[in-house]
Image 1: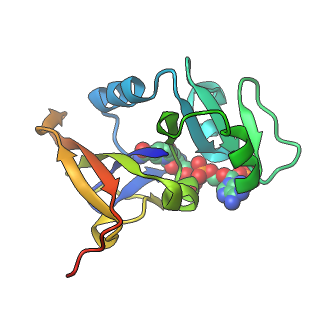
Image 2: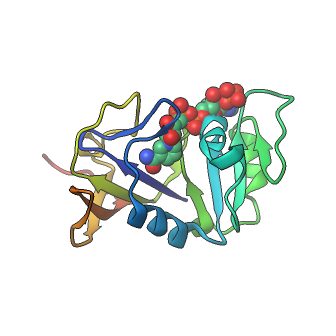
Length: 168
Ligand SMILES: NC(=O)c1ccc[n+]([C@@H]2O[C@H](COP(=O)([O-])OP(=O)(O)OC[C@H]3O[C@@H](n4cnc5c(N)ncnc54)[C@H](OP(=O)(O)O)[C@@H]3O)[C@@H](O)[C@H]2O)c1
C-alpha cells in the first residue's frame, strides 16, 4: 500500500489537531492522488476533516479502539486483522495511509510507496512522521521541481521501499 503525507524539515506533521502548513497546491496534489481511492486514517485525523466528515469521492477506513464508534460514510476497524478483512478486495496500489502520526507508525511497515511533500520550513509540531532520513528501508526515487507558496518552499517526493539495505 501507499502512504501520503506532508512533512516539515524535521518530519513534523501536525499541531493542535490540525496541519502545520496551509498549502493549496499540496491539497490539490493530495486530492489528485487519492480521488476514487481508499484512505486509511486514524479517528483523530477524521475529526480534523471539515465537519469530521469523510472527504468526497474516496472510501475511508478509520482506526479506533472504541467499539461503539460509528460515523456516516466510513468503515471502522479496530485492529490489523479487521483492516486486512476490509481491504481484501481492494488492489494494494489503491490504498493510501493518510495519517495521522499513530496510523503512519502502525502501517509504515506495510507501505511500499510513500508520497511525501517535503516542506523546507520548520514548524512547532506535536505529531511526527517517522524520520525517513534515518530509515534505510526507503529510498528517495523522485523529487519534483520546487514549489513556492506564501514564501514556503516545498517538493513532492516519492520514496520506494527497498529490499536492499544501504551499506553505509
Ligand atoms: N501532514 C499530514 O500530511 C497529515 C496527515 C494526516 C494527519 N495529520 C495530522 O496528524 C494529527 C493527528 O495524528 P494523531 O497521531 O494525533 O492521531 P491519528 O493517527 O489520526 O488517530 C489516532 C487515533 O487512532 C486510533 N488508533 C491509533 N492506533 C490504533 C490501533 N493500534 N488500533 C486501533 N485504533 C488505533 C485511536 O482512536 P480512538 O482514540 O478513537 O480509540 C487513536 O486515538 C493531526 O494534527 C492531523 O492534522 C497530518
